[in-house]
Length: 222
Image (cartoon, rainbow, N blue to C red; front, side):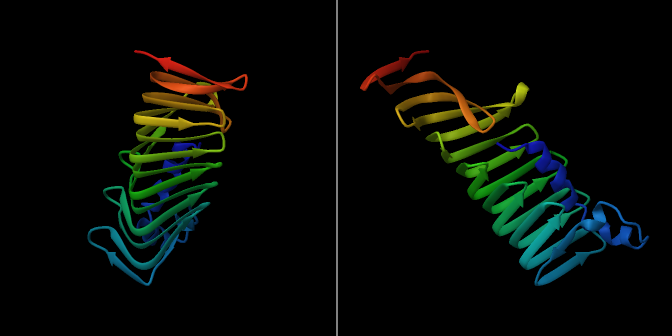
């Protein structure tokens, strides 16, 4: 899993693109000066402090690249919206969706429509993915794919815990499949550390495990 706080810290710079124009006039090299953008058409709103990019949009900063068909940036609101095959790539993580909205004041990044988040071999797809400073929330037709397990549910919440461990809470008609196990329930928690699943907790549901060559039923009750 990725460090969501790193995402937010880098994406803040994207929203400062417009202020790069004023800073560059002083000929001083700053972090903002290293932000770049290009598009087929660029409209600058000098009064409102906004930038509208249209056609083959590409925004770059450090190790982040954001591409889309169009994008709107508003410095005063601390807000950016990329639409049309939006794609954000940084530090081995890739986030794609129909639309990506970044709000630095709320410290959130929201991907809506065919959202897909990939990091270190783990892939999560959903109707919507909301990334916050200490985790993320995926909702609507969630599909979780990991080398050790696959799962489907209605929502998934990742929380970063102490000691580098992450907890993923799956809710709503949850189905989890592993090499020798299958679990079903309304709520199932998966704990991960170092990219590997360390523990699974079924709060309410049932499952089956291959034990000694034979399948054994298990059940968890509230």
